[in-house]
Length: 247
Image 1 (tube, rainbow, N blue to C red):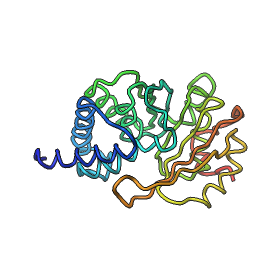
Image 2 (image 1 turned 45 degrees about the vertical axis):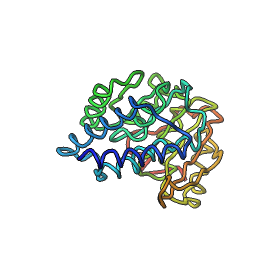
Image 3 (image 1 turned 90 degrees about the horizontal axis):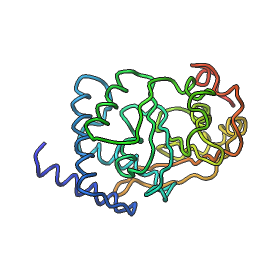
């Protein structure tokens, strides 16, 4: 990629972040560039993302990940504990960590090759207070693992909200939030998840709808507040939440 194209992409990236009232340092900008380079290298031999052009990665992965500030505006300077469930190539957890270094981030993914990639990104970017966990949410949300350990659980995974809630709410402390990244209006899906939220100890606090900056890409962040401890039987064994969602 030529320097002129990179600079143009970074200018647009900075403008997008300014829409969120965020200004990043040159060091953080360098980390985002290095993240893209490692992502591109690994994407050449394993399927991490179908979005591969620099400008698209900046907008559709990095800016989209950081859009969490629309729902949680006080991320800067806070040592919130955050788990990214089904993180894949590290979205949204790694962009959030770069942008808000005080976050304590855990990246959870079930595929070993992806966790190897994530560890390489962390090493290359010299990120601190960020951990990679190889495993399934159904196992690590159990008592004695990572259950009810986090202020925030986030996920961009493509799954029904009822299913995602069973994967994610057990990780959240009482008073914390599970925040699901969704791509469009999902009134029906939210209504269908009502029973699951009630059973799992959560309540839909609000939905934050917006367009990604300088685009017509529609996004919704669903904020689910943890009001009660999740019953010990949840999450159910591996595969069950997706096959038999709580509805």
